[in-house]
Image (cartoon, rainbow, N blue to C red):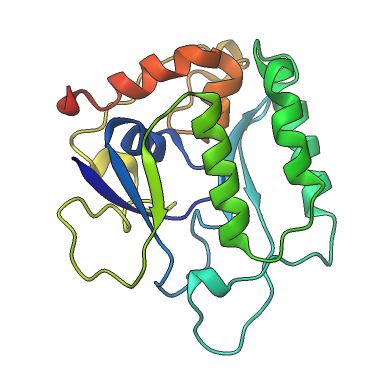
Length: 209
């Protein structure tokens, strides 16, 4: 059984899901220290103006804290703002209407811990794409893993450093205006390609075939 180790991420990008899709078992790190400006609380979507980052505010903590202790801040209306941005960006995408009701509740329910929010969203996307990979949180911090990609899921570390990953062009709502924008949140792929997203995820990681 092939296994991969990843960090938790908010609406993970296509590179991240190419690992989930192509490996048999996914471990998600929950005992590392929380770092600011990572994909743990940020995702990127495509709008009429190009790339847009959506960031989830978190409660400030005294000293270091593990990612499983990071609490979502509810002092502003970030959920409404995120959902409005997603709807504006993908309202005309071929499959947005089909999946809209699956995602809407996540922008209404108040979550206490960011890790729970991320994991539930990830599992939803896996269900929608019929991905059978087993996903489990780590029971303790792992120092070494043969397929450790925790450090690659980072806004400042581009997916191109992964020699086994290939960006596959697919239909995007604003592709004619902005050109193809690679490696966005997997919802960009889902809303534009529907179940054919599976083909893209497969072909981004042909080394596993």
